Amino acid sequence: MPRTALLLHGLPFHSGIWSPVRAALPDDGRRVVAPDLPGYGTSPPLDRDWSIAAHLRWIERVGGEHELPGWSELHLVGHEYGGLLAAAIAAERGAASLTLLSTTLRPAWLAARVAAWPGLHRIFYRRYGGVLYRDRAVAPADRPALAEAFPLPGTRAFADQMRDTGRQLSASALLTLEGRLRRRLVRAPFPVRLIWGEDDQTFPPAVGRRLARTLPGASLTLIPGARHLAPWTHGAEIAACLDARSR
Image (cartoon, rainbow, N blue to C red):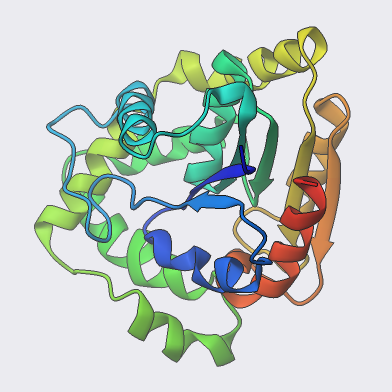
């Protein structure tokens, strides 16, 4: 069976962030599946339950629809929130490999719960969590193209969707995820690669260095000149990393 990779994007973007990566991957028979997460791109939103567990159930359904192989044969690749989901899958089910791009597994995600407070969430997700967050993910020269490729709806519905995702982040799940993944890697090792933009201002490279020291056997690759949205701005470099990992 050809090698199969599942690519999970971060928020508030959609699967289009992987287009430069997919275009740069060699055409050698591998399968690459990159769905829009619920509520983004062409994917309809979830029904009230926006928890990590609900997202994982949704990913399992996507796996069935695409007839993906078992988790132990699947290369999991995730950026930011998609990386959090990929790590959660790998911790519970294992993987052929796990690649995390600009992903923290620390309780820093709990800040999203604070931003989800009633009233505050609309200010936060329309400003910092929306356009400002999107724009600082790339260098200034790339911002006009990014805004055209990923227009963000300045609507109440969008803010409420981001609020619900943040509100339902489980503190216990976040606090234990890194330890659960570490124990899985000790019990049944699989390759782990961390890829980071050298100029990432959202989760600085120091976050990646600490995670590389924490996860057994993990390697860290820094992409010069890249910020938080490296898959979109440095697709060829990311593709080269993924190609080397999946051989």
